[in-house]
Image (cartoon, rainbow, N blue to C red; front, side):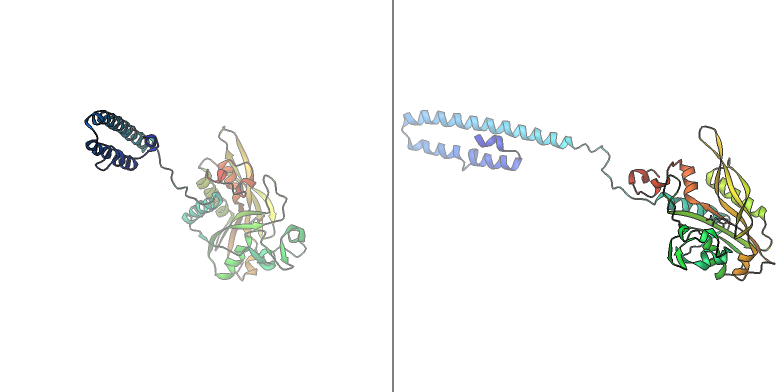
Length: 317
Ligand code: DAH
């Protein structure tokens, strides 16, 4: 009897029933004793045995009802209409997504993609780019040198040289990739970031091509409302050189000119360094900051967010 409240499932309840109320159960065994008793004893014992049997049967039925109800409510506790737990599937980092998006835009404009090594030599990082040995950009403290002539590349302009070395003109490529500089890390600087290099060399390429191609790209990536402007500048590997700015429209209606990177007409010395005929061919080149572009587009205030690998941040893109 006592044990009945411990019974919590249908199987155990059935075992309990067989043990006490079954054909070979305790109650039945007591009944078989009746015939060995005197008529008087039989009456009293019979009544008692019947009471016990009725009590046990009632208790059994009650428990059975309880358990039946219990199981039903347990089943109902699982709400099958709730959304499933779901697997959390990863996705590409926002920088990779941006590179893919940019690559696709330039692919539509007829550009293919080239990649170069991140560990570079001085020829590709400096010499062939018309950067003289005493130039500040070659300073030991301005670069991650591995040996005096091998380094982590400080710019993707290296890929201009590698591409031109590997093929004759015409060239129409972009090259996205990582570059390294020992800058102090803050909200807008990192010792590693990404650049997008562009290079177009053919007969008759002019600054008008540069301006229209960069402008087309900016409108495709940021939206048709943006405008671009080109300010005179200097880079050893372009002549003339320019900084390209973009007029960005903020959500609140205000606008600001934001610097995207450098560009210009490929210096004849660079064309000659790779064996191109600089009398016959001209070209434009640019180098834009990828983080700078995507931080603007997604309104990300701090470059460090991109490299901390905090999924709470990355999951948003
Ligand atoms: N390599 C330059 C830098 O890292 C950016 C740059 C400027 C690239 C002008 C170019 C260019 O291709 O024409 O600052």
